[in-house]
Length: 515
Image (cartoon, rainbow, N blue to C red; front, side, top):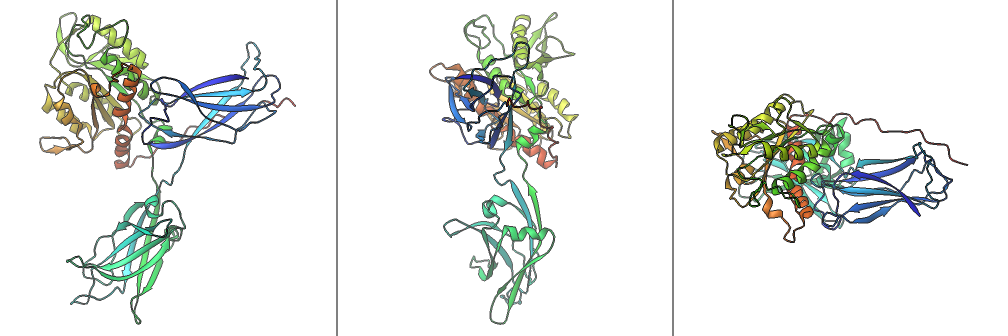
């Protein structure tokens, strides 16, 4: 048995240590134009690579196809997708005959198509009104509201929505509300939905008026026509609840935008005081291992660069005296070219970082606002959502321009950008924790940030005690990148920005089978 191997990087997937997935992806494998000797049996085997030991494990394999140069496998690979992890995949094409290529000629192509599984991403906007509802109080009017229940597989019901109370009326019109179809019926269009009608009582003893049952499939017809539900209140009265509108929408995911090419990245490296030639410095350039700055940069950068089309990153430093006059700068190009601070890939950023350690004198204090404003100027020019900026700040110092940094973050929260802050070293990071905004939304001069765009992580909390730097870097990247998809989606949704069209699928011309 021999194998043809193709590498595809969508993250470092470890099925034994993975967290809750962002979504599921279905991979379909097809092969075209294999210029080999006649084949008898062909099977595609998928391997996933572990985070810590980098070992390959067989994940699954397709069915066996015989006698074709263009195998198109029916069996799919179903994987959990994580934005914050590098999931390395290896596809082995195994055959009974040895693969004998023709010198100078292309020996064939493996096509891997990825599709996000739906998992019922629909949401629905519903609006109801009532007619002839029960007369209960002294004035002959009701204060009605509706309660919706989803039926379960065991026949029980779970509450899933409650409308507002419409005061003092027999003919209420409730506000339209939006609910995920999964919450309404668990994605089963024919599952029973129970609706109860109550008359509100300020003491909590709400009076039951009546109930009716429906199904999502039945309600979805309300996109083109009203639907009225009747239920008896007493022997003489029949109350009515009418579905006025039913608008179905598809909940967009992070992958929907990625397929439209929406993400770009900015990388910023903070340089703190210290002598890179001294082993006690966080910038110490050891011949045997990466320093803390380099590990953090590589850990995060190697993942986010996969979501950038040209992989050109502006790399800036702050906190140094620059040659030739020794002026202090909190916003300088690591590559020494202020007109073009872009570096090619994370390797280019790493090289610029190492070169800057030799050419500048590291110098405090630590100012964040200049680099945040720098990236914000880029983001300000593309507010249509065609690009999204991820700003990575690595620093070990106490922030000395806290007020200005808060103001910069509040302003940046209206722009298509996120900020990742990695703290290295043993310092206290109380100010950086405050910038994170998980406990309390950050504010400046009475203005609160429109959304949470900052994620702070102290690197020391994720360092492997056994000295496994690969595992340390994977843990760090997983933590700091976990919030990016939600931050990205919050900007797109509040601006009503839809994903762009997906690029056309690659469809090579298949070879004629040998027989």
